[in-house]
Length: 135
Image (cartoon, rainbow, N blue to C red; front, side):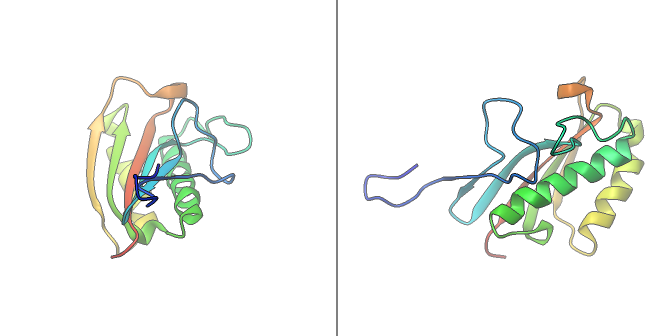
């Protein structure tokens, strides 16, 4: 999207290493200093199916998929400033939290975690992220 003077206001970001969007949305949109990553499920990028029924394995795949999308924008998990984690069962929070902590290491972006009734493809977890191009 461009403004009237030709400046790019928003750009579509996509990675062939992450699963294709399963609906009418982009994997990510860059706008100014920020990249807004759509929620990623724990899908295998080739088959488009959940990697496992295990919430920890799904969470690891979510974060791997986010990493691929961020890489397409020249960024990494170290550039993430905010995430939202959607879980179908908050009793699984500790399992997801362990995988999340390992993926982000010392960097700890702001985060919200929300229990939801259901997720696409019967996933147990979905994670979305906002990253800053300059930190």
